[in-house]
Amino acid sequence: MITLIQDIVFLNFKSIKLITLLHLVLFGSIVHSQTIDGRVLSKEEDEEVVDVHVLNLTTRRATITDKNGYFSITAKINDSLLFSAVQFRNKQLVVTEKIIKSKMLLVTLVSSLTILDEVVVQPYLLTGHINKDMESLEPGLVISASTLELPNANVKPLIKSERYLLAATSWFNAGKPSIDPIINFLSGRTKRLKRWVDKDGQIARLNRIKEFYPDSLFTYQLKIPKNKIDDFMYFCEADTKFTSLATMNNKLEMWKFLIRKSEVYRQKNNLE
Image (cartoon, rainbow, N blue to C red; front, side, top):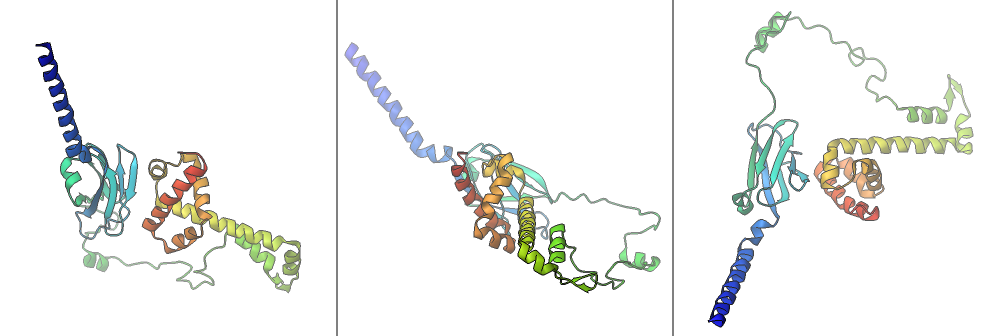
């Protein structure tokens, strides 16, 4: 009798293990994180959907959309996805089994611009009808350096380092010939000023790239500590590909480059 009971218990135990194994095989792919391909659309047809931030709030991983609104992000069931951009209202989705199994997740965002029903502008009493308002208003003269045809009106102002370099290499001083360029070249001052100009240009380029992406993407997606972001950008700038990508102004390709460099940077600085 005891042996029979033991056999029954053993069989039940084997059945439970078999059911558990089948469950893992059938549903394991749903439980584990998978890549979700999607596209962000705008409710207004003329609204751009490029550079929309897609953040997995659960795993703190993020990405951005390309020029057509497409994106890919890793997630699993019950993860929360946040879609945000300056021109759109934030939208949050909870990942479901249906989303995991779908070939393409479509997310429609609503413009964040607030449109007033009626506005009265004082003291001009504008009606909102352009043709009528143009007849009642007398446009004044727009005064600027360009309209006044001033010399060098459209010339970009030089930064401090560029002004110093220009003065050091100029062959005329107050309208008189100068030998300063020769003296500065022989003393090495010209070379030092050129390095200063290059350094200022490097800093300006790095700051421009940093403005493309919020700090949260560096810390959560690239896993770069906030106090190490500047050092990481200098590390990336040393790569010749960085300059070419910065010149192209391709935010998506630059982001892919930063992802690759972040892996190397973390390994070199023991940040894993």
